[in-house]
Length: 174
Image (cartoon, one colour):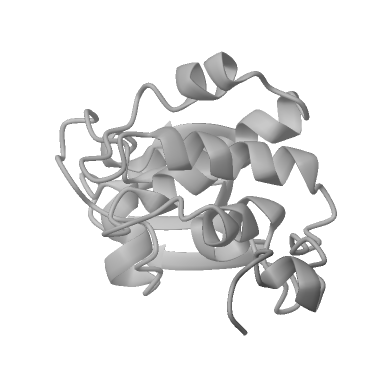
């Protein structure tokens, strides 16, 4: 069967099997490997993409059912070479370690911020509760989302100014 959809703003048409999952369509047919394939049971959340602006686990969506719809992947977050604030937040706050869960966390975090620009830590934790991270314990992920909320324009964090006299404690040999 033939399927046509918009992926990251580009219309694509491919010949597919009717049972092909969206995650495999994105990865194998379009080469968009940023969407990870983890558990294949919708438990881990590494495969989250947006379908018509709503986060979905692409391992539970048939590619055929995405026909005629808009799909956005993690590759669609950056614009003109500039990281989305959610991506920059993960850089600034060390929101990733192994990186396997990161694409799903980024897509879920961005969706949360689009709906609620100033979420509480609890709201961030609730939003990502459908995803598993085995490395970070979630604290740095929550901080990363909060960084993005505080920097909606994506401006990098600035280090506090430290004068030479503040850099060396009093009474220390220079």
